[in-house]
Length: 509
Image (cartoon, rainbow, N blue to C red; front, side, top):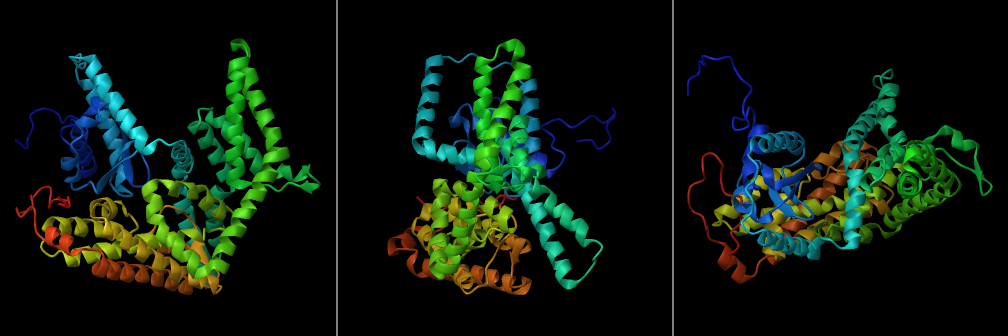
């Protein structure tokens, strides 16, 4: 290819990616069926989530072998694990390529048999429903959709709050401390508004109306209102009150849309939505949600101060199965409520121990199968992410397919959770100022009353306990003799591809 074009330089075409993020997106797109197979694109903290027209067009094995792909998960959407940071950069490039491909592609040919496509789509839909579409799990997923977009702000503000606390304790930069406090606290003081906005959006209402109703909760003037003989407090009910208020606003708005004449809709519907929902929020929901929030805080503190090591053992041991079942999403509003109340969630450092057990188990698998080059390559590529709390590559690529190592990983998580829970019981409680990160990435977000040094030491001790117990349990109990015989060979002895690197697939057949 000539390096001296005779024409003015043109913007690169989609097939000529200009950087690694666009290159990764360009590599992924054809392996999921191309632009016309994509109906929706979104992302969370670590995963690119796409909705597909035809699941059969996805090339799973080729997709998993891409260097940028850490794993894939099939749930209500097809989810490609890219890792934090990378997913936020690759997703916009992927969306752009999808749009460009649609605009450049000719109209799709008429299917030979429409009935065949309809039958195939119906079969896929029913299979997906059977696996994942229980009403309870769907509701948890929708609740997660409300809170997950808030996580980047929670992380950023949490780290700034931790830095501010460190400066205060050391007596450094006293003129900067108030500014950092304002930056760290501004989002949390208005988090109810964002929850209301996202709730209305998720449940089919007008987002700004949901935010407007939720804003009542944090308005200072509510202190002048008395309910059941008690004056309301600004922020009473917190995110739970905002969630309930916005859900009510969605219901009222939808009823108004059906009953109000079209000519009056633009005036009457928003007015009635805010008025009715606002009055119910002030004279009912704020009080009830406040009581519920206080009960959650009391329960979490009592669980660890009384249950201690046993509570930590149960929480740390069961978190990986909860993740596999999708039930961990129910904890998101609980974490957020605890952060809103106390400035940190005491549950997250204990739950993070599950990832430590997973890392220890993966290291043991690496040691026990010295001849399985493909599986060892998978572990080596996924371990850095695992140490940072991103467990999907190790779960879906190593422990879960093997079976027994997944159980022994849970044992490691239980041991780490018991270690941290014990110190909570001894009065050295601490938590995380944000949700989302785990593993080593949680260190900058730790906050406790015993001082930063003690808090960091306890959390590090919990991680080390999880690593060691997860390793030992997997090394000695994670394999049967038959498993060692079948797996301790290299099913793919060929040299690694110089471009894509070693295969990421564990050969388990």
